[in-house]
Amino acid sequence: MEASQFKSDQYVKFCPGCGDHAICMALQKAMAQVGVPTHQTVVISGIGCSSRMPHYLNTYGFNTIHGRGGAIATGVKTSHPELSVWQMTGDGDCLAIGGNHFIHELRRNVDLNICLFNNRIYGLTKGQYSPTSPKGFISKSSPFGTVERPFIPAELVFGARGTFFARTLDVDMPTTVDCMVQGHQHKGASVIECLVNCVIFNNGTHNWIADRAMRAEHSIVLKHGEKMIFGKENDKGLALDYSQGLIPQLIVVSANDERVLVHDATQKDSTLHRMLAMMGQDEVQDEDLPIALGVIRNVEEESYDMAVSQQINEVREKSKAKTFDQLTATLEQWTV
Image (tube, rainbow, N blue to C red):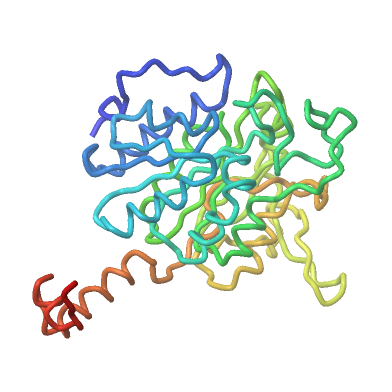
């Protein structure tokens, strides 16, 4: 299939320079690679700049209400498990008013592809701080700086027992497409955190890794089965240091060091995945450690939608009532 088949006839109304343009193009490419026909693909969203995405994709779609995209997406996938269901959401839509739906779609492990656009600001409502804005961030709703500690999306995913977590940059198209394709292949709730730039209200928020001149030194693209190596010259690697007490620490070593770790995204124990996902995050940032991009965690667990479908089939097989009329005939009845 071609990416153009997933492009709608609607004019894209993101601001010029907005990172959402790149994510939209990546989605079209990823959907084409996945190969599920447009009529079997559904895109659900809440409210926000990122939530305009259903309008720009030639699929079935539903632009729902603020924070409720997860609830609608869960219903669509549970009632029609054969469909490919994508959820578009932002750091405000997903982690503030929609936080409860988000943690439960992860806990249930509903087979959804969740693209979480993180620009660390409320863009559509014109520049208020969001749940991922760093402490001290000055915005229209925090003119003296916010006093709140931010959510770290990865930490929330792991806390909700998420089975798939990836992170990517709006300016890194190949990694973004790869994360989306792998997220779709995963049978369960897949979260792809997309670090995007809001050119109007929070311009440059990810520049320390988005800038091409600094990206190689400040980020590492993790790939399952490959050594954790990064740097402009690919001369640095990640290893575990056990000399600091009971809790091992990630450290940067030479790429030739025998201690350099090999990434295993399928390891069920989430300890190392959590450590990798937390690198480069506010309040826990070690300047020597890069931020992790790519697929960090990808483990198999039973999905909610398939478990429900299996349960329904089992009950139907055991039940003597095969039609609605037969079912009502077995129940207590009275005439008014």
